[in-house]
Image (tube, rainbow, N blue to C red; front, side, top):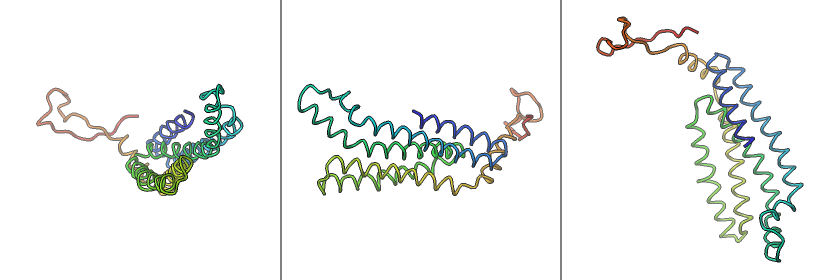
Amino acid sequence: MFAIGFQVSAATRVGHELGSGNPIAARRAAFTAAALAAIESCALAVVLLSLQRVVPSWFTGRVDKTARSLAGDVTHTFFLLAVYVCGDAISTAFGGAITGAGRQCHSAAVVLVCYFVVALPLAYVVGVRWHFGFMGIISMMVIGTWAQAGGNALIVLRTDFQKESVAATDRVQWRVVSSKDGDGDDCRSGELELGPVEL
């Protein structure tokens, strides 16, 4: 939930700054959101690691040997979970910045490649074919998450914020108005003209 908060904040702030004609501030907001998400997720990862022998038993119980064995198996995944939490938060924050800049199609391509081309095939090979089991599957999915984080970061790094700001400013400063008759119900042949928005 914290990561989603950074995502929404980044999308809002980056979009606002681009629309206001402040590309430098938009770029700063994008990387600030990712940095804050990284700090928050690292703190959460530390909490998870410190509770790795406690949390699983909340769900499995300690009634019998099977439950304790299952809790022990889950405990082994907590290091990978901590690594995943960090990568997911960074990826999500950068994803918000990408949304704010209006480049979602690039982010969608990153998701498809990282998970469906890279992570899932690797998970099958490592977990099933090479018999590493669920730990192998989880490991490869974590790699997919970090690949997505890297891909989203690369998109933000390669984004021309100046160009995006000009495009966003143009969209803000121009609006569709009715024809010169001024009557919205009686436009001549549906003619429209662009006029500046009064801010």
